[in-house]
Image (cartoon, rainbow, N blue to C red; front, top):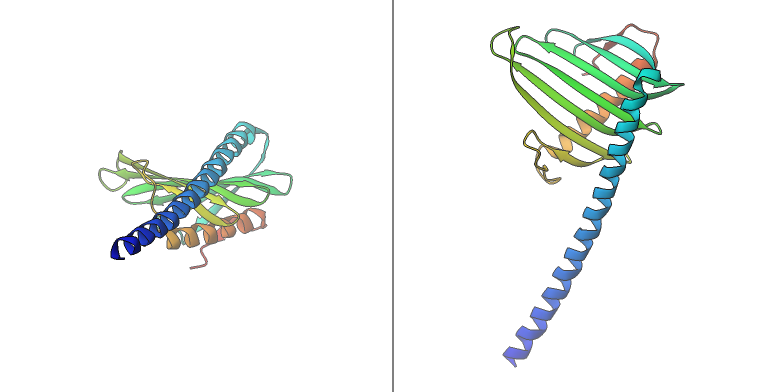
Length: 182
């Protein structure tokens, strides 16, 4: 009797685990397909960037030494935003990409100086992929995927979603400076 019970439990466990694994495989394939589509859009936006109208703005309150933003617009649509943040110990650049009015990708590059306002000695890049307002993949500086259940994932998604909206609104405004809403 005990042996039959163990077999039944084992079969149920394998069934649940197998279905979970199959579900995860489908989700991973969907994410991979979405990331490939995002990469194609990213390449298209960069290829067409010289044809887009450029809008330059100052950034205030985002970093210690100020910053600037350049937005690339195709008609009324923001396609790309490059925000540069200056600091005593480094300079950070964030490139935001949009498709059909939605944030799809951010390339974050942090250049660290050897001394205040010195030369760049370290470059750190992170890649963030978005679909339907949600971050679907984060590749850290070593190219490894950051787990969606990691403590920093949700706050990073929220921060970038908020900043991208501030930058899009600022790009479309008549003001020459975008003030941080923090």
